[in-house]
Image (cartoon, rainbow, N blue to C red; front, side, top):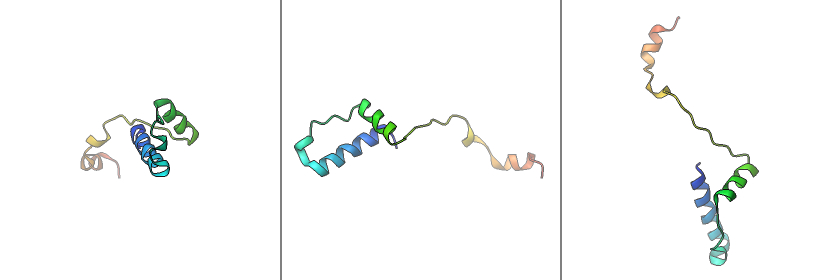
Amino acid sequence: MTGEMIQTKSKEFLQKIYGDANSEFNFSIGWLEQFKARHGIKSYRIFGESGSVVMENIEDVLPR
């Protein structure tokens, strides 16, 4: 789940709970970082070419 998704869902949740009473609440980047830290949410980027491997070629080369 991306940070933007968390902010959007939080705004929707606040709207459902409190209506327009808290419409000025700001789900800023600082709020998001504290939310992620409080709940142990981390994001990782995966780099590499794992999707470009042809498994048939690897099976032929691997020792049995």
